[in-house]
Amino acid sequence: MSGETARHILTRSYAREGALIAGLLSGQTLTDAAKGTGISRKTAWRLKQSEEFQRRFREAKDELLSCAIARLHRESLGFIATLSGISSDETAQPSARVQAAREGLFALYRGIEIFGLTARISRLEAMATEGK
Image 1 (cartoon, rainbow, N blue to C red):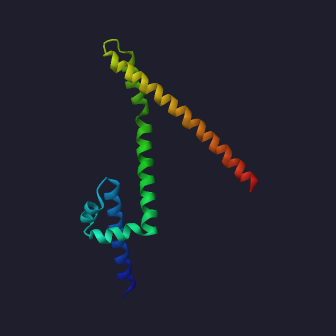
Image 2: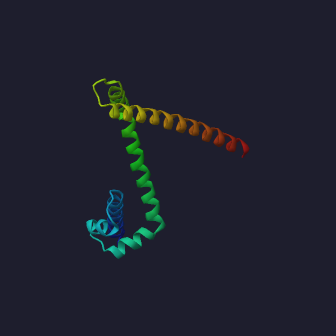
Image 3: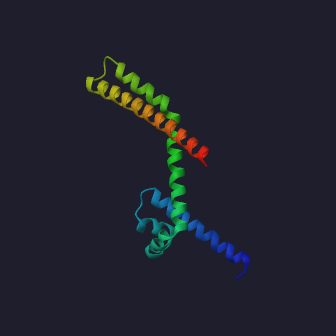
């Protein structure tokens, strides 16, 4: 097999794996994701069992989560303005005002909690690095 042919097969294989990963991350079943990539369910199942596929799947999932968090971060000021507007709107239904206030306080609490945990983890990592 020539080097060019081997590269083509490898590239096609990675493309199919990528398409299978994309299908799975979009919520498709293994059967549907396999169908969308043009491979059999059995082949898709075998691919999914490999360590390399699992590594690529985790990386893709981490990247997807990172992008989702970045988008939420970009929109956060709008969310805050909306919650604030509803909670202070005298004409809004009381239940909507309470829910908006509750959501705002919950988001604040979670933010403080995550911020604290991040600081603690950073300190522990620094201590572990110093101990090496």
